[in-house]
Length: 337
Ligand code: SF4
Image (tube, rainbow, N blue to C red):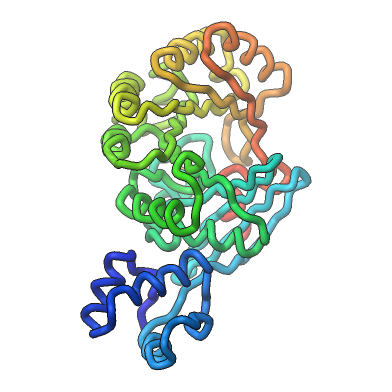
């Protein structure tokens, strides 16, 4: 038996043609799967009974079931989803005002090895398929009963290390699940060829750079990928991205106490952010057991923001959501597997 969700729309049309079925049937099935979230061929009432029977005999419909759920006091909900091969990934539902955001994973584990991240410690286990990425949005929407408005690719994994599948998933999330392209943000640790390729796609998805240090030597200490792609390389790629997209970039800056929170760090960050239309998200570090980095206290965060305000285009402080339910990336998987 094959998983029918493992076919893109184009592949499904080709498959139906090879099965001597009309190719528009593929569009109908795809709609049932990705717009209506059908989990049973019997629900596909505009498909003939004979075809439904045929599909039932040859295919199954995968779905993501949560193996563990944690609800935070701030309302965010973290899901640990079990995949067909027994691996697990995390997705987080974040309600904020009118926004309903889902943070999705793109890989099982991550090969980037960031020194402050629980997922980095796991290492890369495997890439997710496009349908496993898109299904996180559909499943959270279904479980919560809330219409998802925004999607961020900031969960486990480096999206640009799995870009083919990520782009296929984004097409489904955008076109079929119905999330506007500008409501979808892809966050990268700074994979330069990925930024360039992403710039060349015809879609208006937004880009975030997980920068975390604006001084090259410091960045290399916490993010091994910084040795391969320097801050200068990233800035050149962002110039190219902006020349093609004309979209503001977000710099994510996880703030660690006594590591990247000095005035010198703020000046370097301000200089980077002033080079292209951008905004900065300061994310106070959520301390992870077994890691040497410390969470900043409120005074540290405010002091750093005060340095930045006069020299940076736009600054937001984002206390990471779900701190009381181990929402730092990779933590939940570490506890329940
Ligand atoms: S911070 Fe992101 S890129 Fe770095 S190891 Fe963790 S998941 Fe990977």
